[in-house]
Image (tube, rainbow, N blue to C red; front, top):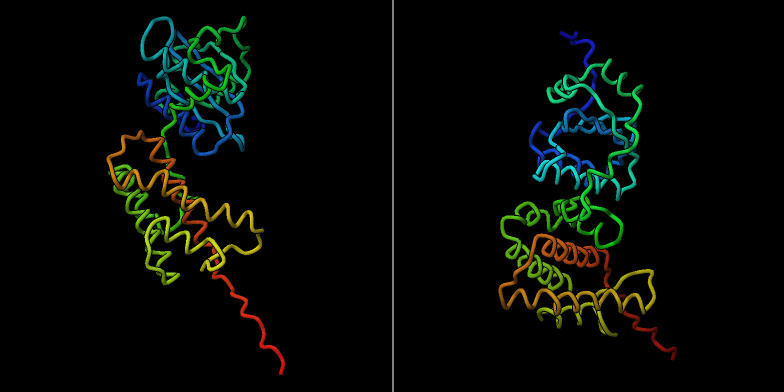
Length: 286
């Protein structure tokens, strides 16, 4: 038995023998902006764990949900993970360890001596990592990288979200269509309340942001940028809001999230728009 005092103070993620939980553990680390500086693949009897060094020298161990040597979910998931890490240019090497070390890792109980052993170990040569990656998971062109990154879950970037959409974002995945329709309607209400205009849709935004009698504009930009920003409102409504208002749209998670972020950008532009100052001129002298 090892002493509790000798247990290494590192993080653990995933569940042993459950490949999807281990895949998602790796993807979540990447999804939320952590940089993986290196990944040590620990192998024993065709079972594989990851020991990853993140920024700030933090260590995270991913439990043994990965396998090799047969056609199945474990090897396929291992291939996907390695493909993603290759695409991100993460430094990787494989190290053979004992089944007992893998067992301790799966119990979230690696010791300081275990870490010292791994650090001093020689990597497997010749390299075998390429043998674990299926051809479909090699990130050798734009299309293959795009396919790999589709394994990431679409996540709403709450830090970028306009506060007036927060309530819709919290329930977004329950009914994306309803949330998007409400977001469009709410934006129109906001602009009508600010400007006193009574129109709807693209007519409302044309009166609010375009032409010499516009009610709102953006400070510090030239006329071309002004026109471009104003046109975004009409274009978004023509391309996305109007079809959604008149028929059922069959969209995947990535599509509806992209549309939410487009609407969010309109909210952000409206927020920084200012009332247009009308030059009434000075009275001519008598």
